[in-house]
Image (cartoon, rainbow, N blue to C red; front, side, top):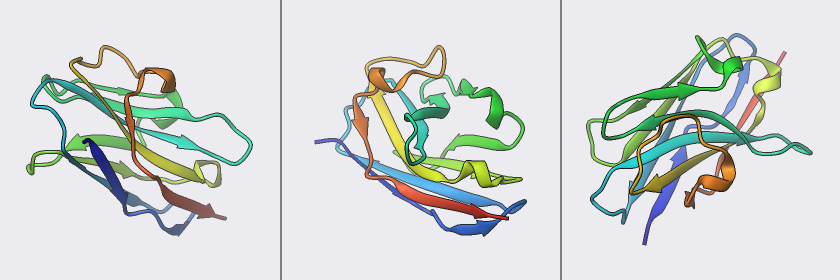
Length: 126
């Protein structure tokens, strides 16, 4: 059974940085598309960044380009999101996501995701 567990969410002042982590377990030994999504109160879940674990190709939402970096860890199943220059509008619940037996060719919409973590809260105050 696939499990995704996020950590690293916190409250941070605008302009600050955070690093989110995701630990995946129970996943099949195949190619995958992993990513980060976020959802603010009253808003739809939106894609932040994704990575094709087989090729290393990355994809970002336009508003995150240059500020956020998605990466894989040396440990199998580890995924990270480095967030810099945080803004109050980045405040949201951040979710780790994964789909297997596929690469990423783009930042997938939420309905294409097979597995979700429980989320970690990021709050940016001014």
